[in-house]
Length: 467
Ligand code: NAD
Image (cartoon, rainbow, N blue to C red):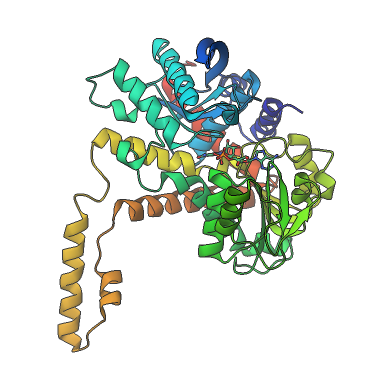
């Protein structure tokens, strides 16, 4: 099953639970603008024609927003699927953007950094020429195969072409902190995945369904893909939630350890040897895809779409699947897993941390000021005076560490993390309430789509587009 078809199927399943008029449902589903481009880039002594896409799925709110993917598998339907998911994701977590996505059909491993820079800059130039990028138009971000380095190139190219406009830094998010980025964006998607998993594992009703005690401490986790999302999900889930990472998979294979794997040590080993395999104290798995079939409390596919399909769904032994990647389970496989009683935390919710913190970065760029700059010192002084007063009144004094904890003003990173946590917790409870109130809605994904469709539909109805 194609990824785009899976997204449409998930939409249709949820749409049946709404009373949104059919015309508006069709409008919500449709991709509003699709831009396919081909451009030449000199690679070595040759010219290569690069194929690329930018899809703006929904203009119900502007700007549109979504990452740029570098992958040799990218095609128009994949980008359409990813752009559609962005619309529903933004609506669910109350981030006021329409959905978009970009794709460049290259494997980033085949190019030097200098060549990647030329491709990224040329792609950005094409977007500027067609008015497909801008702080109020369409704002890209990182995705598979791209990161803050590429976002800095995009910003610089935009700035060169559009110099003198005051809000230019808001044309792209996920930039390095010293290039108008925001603290906490790199870890945001993985941190959001952790917050979402934590909510599910604290949910007594759901935990009862899968036969687990509520709580995260000591629960086992398997991760497919140790890139940006997989790495941060693993390290934060272990450090803050006490999860034990028993298996990880990458392109070259998978490793397993009952005692738990230290992800930083695994990545250091990979850097030194060029592979995850033969990590001291761990067992090699015969094939990387076998990692998906390991028995565990939570399976985190954090690589690409269509990893769990009808041919392997029956062999999945996880109690919970957290879809950190977009579309890792096909619509047919979803039905098989739900019948097996597995809880699926859907992509539209669980990986929304990235776009949430991108929204904070966009706001920071528009306000031209770091979060916390105005109130941090004021809060610190106020809390410090309060502590002094309590000490004076009680005759007891607190130590420097306690004073540092109580009497400190929030920095940008504290505010970003707290805003992200608030967003993920709120959105979870919106989904959960829908699922428990509307007894015919049996799974979190359908609840997420019903919630999102309702919000997007209400925008369209208020626009007067359909009088
Ligand atoms: P990334 O390029 O940083 O990492 C992906 C990793 O997966 C790479 O290390 C790659 O080698 C590995 N991989 C690829 N195929 C694999 C396979 N078959 N088995 C095991 N490992 C494999 O990409 P990312 O930014 O972490 O994105 C991963 C997924 O998360 C994508 O689906 C993306 O759309 C989604 N996502 C990313 C963000 C973000 O902020 N970066 C936000 C939301 C969703």
